[in-house]
Image 1 (cartoon, rainbow, N blue to C red):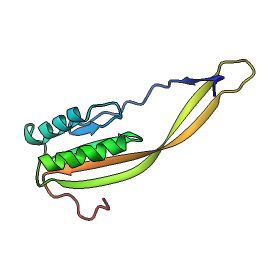
Image 2: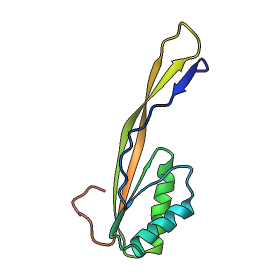
Image 3: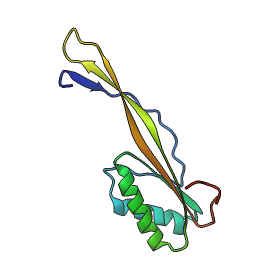
Image 4: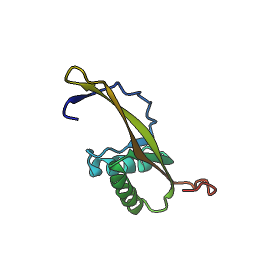
Length: 123
């Protein structure tokens, strides 16, 4: 792959709800925890959704467990899945064809709520 250069595609910007937190691998756990607790306690939100992909899943689970220790009586619903990400590579040398690679990335979405959530949900 040293003869190819990755092409950055513009991402589809999906709007983020006011009670949705997207966790990244680079973000600081302290900031996520303080923001989530402020949403639940000070802003009066009844539920929040924490979403992550790939390497950030471990951090998300840790953050949720710490939030549940700080705020007693929260209900949790977890949804896991996967998504496909296609990367495009352009050749740096003449005579080579452009490449497209597809990666399967795990996705997690954890909903924390003050009220009881749907008991028929799998997670």
